[in-house]
Length: 113
Ligand SMILES: Nc1ncnc2c1ncn2[C@@H]1O[C@H](COP(=O)(O)OP(=O)(O)OP(=O)(O)O)[C@@H](O)[C@H]1O
Ligand SMILES: [Mg+2]
Image 1 (cartoon, helix red, strand yellow):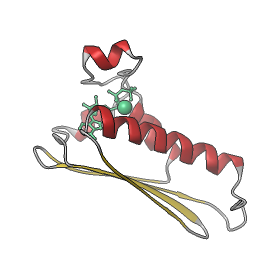
Image 2: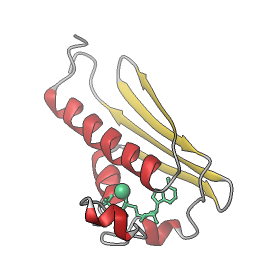
Image 3: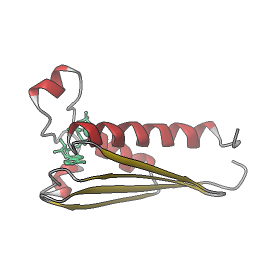
């Protein structure tokens, strides 16, 4: 209905899916906030979970702390954050151990695309 291109929709869907799974599996739940504008889509997750001690490590492909239970369900490849980064024009993680994590992404597009 907004007339966004399939590429922008695909990127937004990948980001939202991966961010949502991390929110549930690692963050103990929280909020997903989406702001859709004339030329950008901002997707943000906010949780008050355990936080990420080493962000540099967490964004490496293959790094995971997923539990056996999560792995049994097919999660824990350590590909979520790298996937989010690849599909976003802006990718920011604000996190503090014991306080929580905010992941903010923005996709930019030409108006009408
Ligand atoms: N919201 C969060 N709160 C706390 N830790 C997080 C959060 N999101 C990610 N992490 C940490 O970063 C690691 C890497 O996340 P990533 O999404 O790349 O992989 P994964 O969730 O372990 O596996 P996959 O996404 O491939 O199923 C996680 O294993 C976890 O240690
Ligand atoms: Mg993940």
